[in-house]
Image 1 (tube, rainbow, N blue to C red):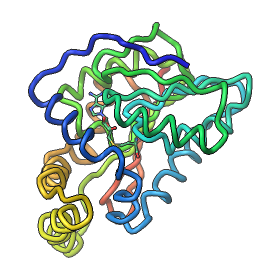
Image 2 (spheres, rainbow, N blue to C red):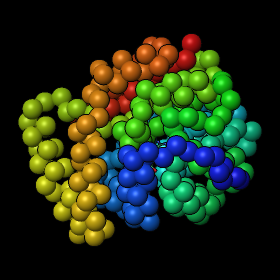
Image 3 (tube, helix red, strand yellow):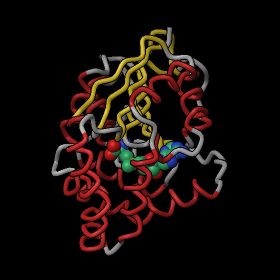
Image 4 (cartoon, rainbow, N blue to C red):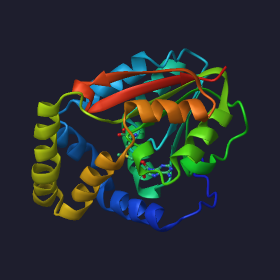
Length: 243
Ligand code: SAM
């Protein structure tokens, strides 16, 4: 196990994101369950199903945070495989490592502090890369997608699980009410932190929609890019292959 101490370029947005996640790290899992009403577990399960990960594979879970996906992958790749849980934020990695240890995860997981925009791995390293609810926090998303495509092996898959655009106006309205009114209140009540959850709602609204993200993945060098809307497009799962 090693915590890489690679230098990361920290611009203003990156450091704001870092602050947000430092302040939420300890409560992150509880808040996830609360704010998605547990549905994030279903979104993650589908991501695992679509990953095609098999015993012996090398997997990168970038912006992996507290390691929900890493936990599952670690069981799937087995003792000959490897999973790298990477995140820009040391607090999230620590919470993740403790959780994985408590779940009996051992030798096949590595912990690396890294920025998705400039991944510290050689070309063609991974059979599968996941970024779940992480891309929206990244300043230079195109650079991050290029970096992920670079470290993916030929034939490897990139899965991007992220908030997206609801596919009907009624749902959009309800969802806006929820995220701009209720969510910051829940954040204030549970974590004493309204601002972080307001930022969360804003970052979701700013994120590229389904078709835009698909185009960005293609531009970054991924092929056969497709996506599935989940929960009416509140979330989308994009998948691309490096040919
Ligand atoms: N993947 C986990 C999940 O689905 O539960 C965690 C998602 S959490 C909402 C977003 C994570 O992205 C945080 O842990 C944050 O530190 C990380 N992050 C933000 N910007 C990043 C960057 N540029 N490079 C790597 N990780 C980043």
